[in-house]
Length: 275
Figure 1: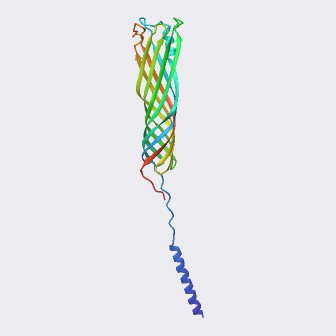
Figure 2: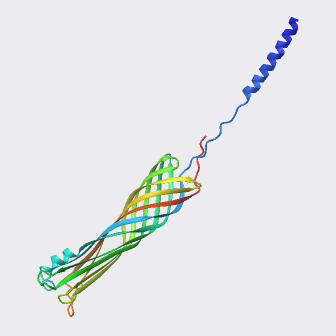
């Protein structure tokens, strides 16, 4: 009887040991985490937004003993000739660039070309201090149809798909200005035109969010300063006489603020797997 019980116990213990060994050999592999988005790569996109800005327009002349004006007329003209305009419009265009991701930092180079839509005009009149009731009028206008920028970007990742960045670089636009002077003393006239491709500067901040498949959305603010364009003229004339010694100087100084949103598509680039 004892031998029988010992044999049964041995069989039971052997079966339990084998089952425990089988259970120890079984395991489940942990699932891999989803790949992390990587910002490195070339991208293209488009933007739309608005700009609001201002331009200082100046018309001034100098006194000449052999010229047309009395000494008191020149300060009056220069005062009326200091004019300013404000402009606001829809803006939008196309963007291309390249990003390099280094850990949590993203460095990039971006260029864009946009419809700018800056436009404005101003008019001022006054009586000649010497010779009322005769007087004069100064008209000026400015426009810039397009704007291009070439900028660096530097940012950090608040999350793997969320970029905060600062940007700055060159701003390029064709600035056009028109100026006219007329009077009622002897029907004198003077005019000048500015057409200057300006290279100024721009700086701003933005944020961009990648949402899959290479696509991302961004929002951005830029300040643009195109500097001053200047032209001189010596074409003041009345009905029968020219007065080249009354040299006129005209200038345009243009700045603008731009707020815009955009969408980008990134081509290829590495994806870093996380486990």
